[in-house]
Amino acid sequence: MTTASRLPIQARGASAVTDPIPLAGGRLTVGVVRVGNSVRRPLNDSSEFVQALLDLFERRGFSGAPRYLGQADGIDILSYLPGDVPARFQVWEDRQVAAAGELLRAMHEASRGSGLAGRFPVVCHHDPGPNNAVFRDGLPVAWIDFDMAAPGSPMEDIGYAAWSWCISSKRPTSVDRQAEQVKILVDSYGLEGPERAVVVDSILERQARNARFWAAILAGPGVRQTSPEAIASRIEWSRREFAFTYSSRTSFEDALA
Image (cartoon, rainbow, N blue to C red; front, side, top):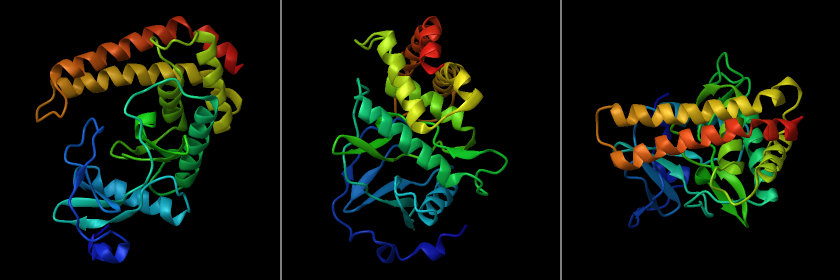
């Protein structure tokens, strides 16, 4: 897909240039800024796919993601979504967990059967945690940061969302309460049939994959936005969460039965 049809930027709704405001919180992409009502991100290997995905969402009427506005001077330009993005994971209310499940299902349905999904059911976000959700009036209403998006199974995102929105080895709530929230998320997503029986397996797989992902970042070349010590901490955190979920899997599975 060429970028020529995307320019000039102003015609797509980006504001006139003002002083850029750095946007913190991203763990992998450096140099993301807000300029007026747009967000500007350095081009990367995922830019072409993200452009096509956001265009697909716009054509199919999915409003829970930024709009792609164009490219200029090595920068992807997206619409800015007003709202709040949580800085840290926390204990979420049931209504927030339910809204996250509904938003995840809507995103998946917006890519289902598309050429971008290919032989897979949908395009997955692959990082649909609260840190990549825009909140308005206390509820998640949109996803951001699609750099890791790729064709996949909905269970990949469901597993990660169930973990990041509902489960924590250090959370003050009980395992049974966490299991209740996993059920709320899965129910609000609308997951039925035999796939409910493998939700816990999907959570465990995503926790193990997260440890492998950060280990690969730590071992790989190039400049890292995060220090080696912080990456090692994320690997250990992922392993700890895996052990917690594995030891509590009966509680989670009983809640989903």
